[in-house]
Length: 239
Image 1 (spheres, rainbow, N blue to C red):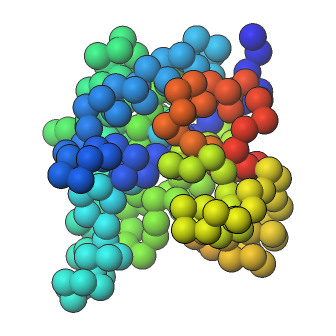
Image 2 (cartoon, rainbow, N blue to C red):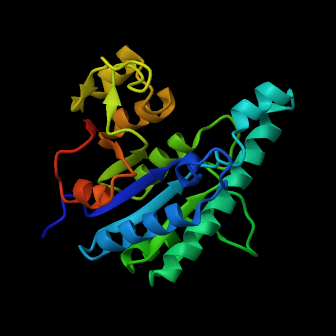
């Protein structure tokens, strides 16, 4: 089977790693292993995979800043450090599943990860290694969504796969509004005009400028990552 995408950036939120139970762990080992298993499946098709991970299961910089009243830059840096913890958990799971993996960070911490260097990241991808990108862009005031788009553009990815807990983009929250309409196809301008909560405006604008498609899909349905890579019509495509 021939994949639709040769090189992808998979965007995972920190919350995706969190246990579903009320008092569950911030990093659920079963969920991390499930993600590793799905990624291993698509490696069989020769797809090159980079992953940008968030840190919201541990610290959400924006919310921490608002609730605690601490400096915004400090809160955002705390969030970046949280993404590194998640990146280390993913790396350990991927290696356990037999995949060669590299963790790169936008903030230098050489004892635990490589610094992000574009040419080195490209070489890893070409050598069939999974590359996990942590610490966002390395700058406060920018989200990990923006970091994902930035890495995708820099590395010449064919698409961004945004993994969520719902099966696409809706006109409103489908959990709260049962009559919410699901969109199968959207343009970048649709997202901007309708103010749909897909990614932040900076990320969407960067995708638009570089004609980078986004596929929003449900991470928690087994096999969905493979379905997207093979070009099956699931989720919502933004282009």
